[in-house]
Length: 311
Image (cartoon, rainbow, N blue to C red):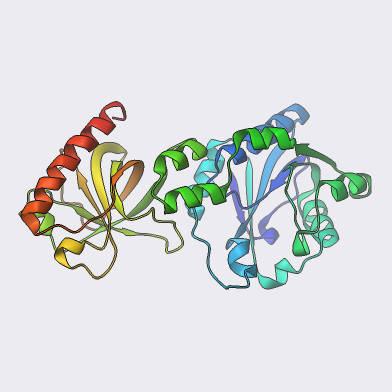
């Protein structure tokens, strides 16, 4: 897959079959659109093009000026799109100025002049241009004028899946990774660098890797203890992870700590990826480290049972 960071990097394609959207998480709904995109491209002897935007449009146009916590970093999104067979990924910087681009200008300047779109494939509710004014009806009515065909993924096909990035964000914010994973079609994951912590886990027999996430916009699931899989140098290990403020030891900031099963390597400064399987309990305060140790031992038994079929 070729990646273009900016419209000026893109070289017009002879037979471009195009879709556009944020594609955050590349969930099952997105995958349905991508499958059809690739089918159309193969049938017509063309190449598939995904237009996406960075940063997330809502973080730019929101009246509350709040950034959106994302399901995937740019690198993760690109990897998922490549896995789904996309030939070309065009990333357009989303600015206030770009958000003012009218529908007609977006179609003519980008879809037609820059990309050379021959067919556009969109979801039933997809809209674009200033104030999201452009939709399927407008495209269909003006397809001949712009010189490309347009195909809409039927409402029924999308709603049968019943998935959206917002639903997944909500599930993760509540710690419901089972629902999030179902909608994503894979395990939700985050990556980060292992950094030194206070090493209190070692004192009770459960050493942990403290993970510092790479991206500030990446959504961190709700506080609590999770059964996880840990990927280190292409090898997977079971583990149990805690997200929270460590109230038992009077923690003052949120940490992500994972106890990796059957693992004794020193990995400070190295990157690991964590896949969330299931939340087992909320974070809670215990009366000292000994009581915490007893609970962690129970947690490990439960996590090992959950991970039995995962590794």
